[in-house]
Length: 78
Image 1 (cartoon, rainbow, N blue to C red):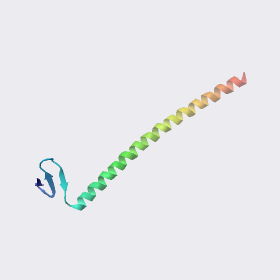
Image 2 (cartoon, helix red, strand yellow):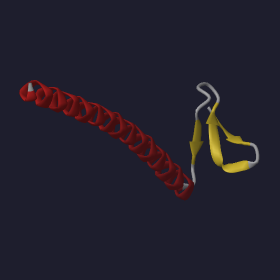
Image 3 (cartoon, rainbow, N blue to C red):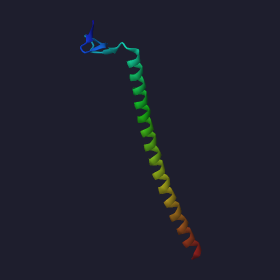
Image 4 (cartoon, rainbow, N blue to C red):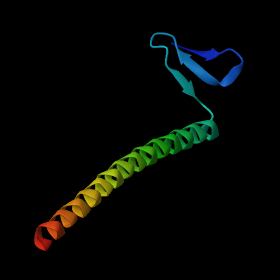
């Protein structure tokens, strides 16, 4: 059984499950768009975090290569 949510004529609530349903399509579309945008922001943040980690790893490898290069120069100069 569904009942209207008090103060919100576009909403109904299923009494047995507690699920709230939006009957106004424009509200539903805005909700879906907001949800999609929030997911895109989360995905972007995760991707940025991964790129930062990769950049740190590359920087570390670059430092190690410089150290190896310096050691090889010292070895060859002796």
